[in-house]
Length: 290
View 1 (cartoon, rainbow, N blue to C red):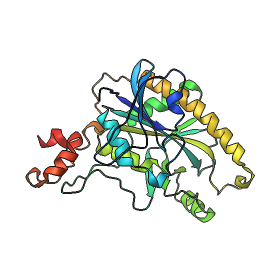
View 2 (view 1 turned 120 degrees about the vertical axis):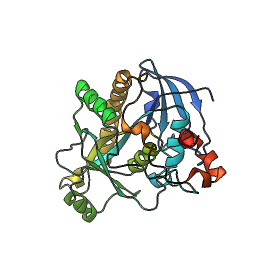
View 3 (view 1 turned 30 degrees about the vertical axis):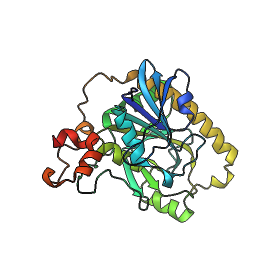
View 4 (view 1 turned 90 degrees about the vertical axis):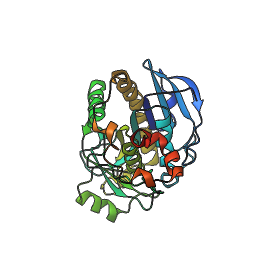
């Protein structure tokens, strides 16, 4: 595999066709954890190599519960990615987060059921720090870029990750609001955990399409309204990705904690780690077991 990229983009399947993106290669990767959602679209944007992955596959074939999160993040790591910008549609749980706003959450709350959220196990135990689940340095670049482009955004807040694929009941929505949650989605918690274990800088751009079912005007929102908001958000997302990629200094050495997340996280005595597990996780832990 010759293609490499330092910046990874996970999002809707239309992003890799954004203006200014020069597709060079479609890279199909088979990982120790199975196949990712689709091929990685590797090419140049703003003069830098980037890799796009349509989270749900082209044509939106995979539901949130069916996604192979481990393969998706492992594939990014194997391409040489160090920064991941993840974009996803969300519902708003607060009046202040209006449709077409972008929220850059600093926290996640897990309401999924039984999804695999770690690379580890099979004889190798690791406990990474996840108190601050996103890269603050990358989030700052994203927030500043939103401001420069005139996109209404909020830095901070909590993304509640639900199982889906059905949306919340009104009772659930009101409970989440009482907990102080900001936005609700179905995909980004697992991405964030696995990116941390892979020592990648990760940030979520939560693009508000509508208010969750708690809002008194929710029933007045039509599917056509939501689709219109999705289209507008996609256009803003393309502008934002271009601006962030342009600003990121991919030649500098990363000094954030993300790049050393496993330094003190591996608990298992290297002498007892099964060889098969060492081989499977070489990409992630090889430098610590040498």
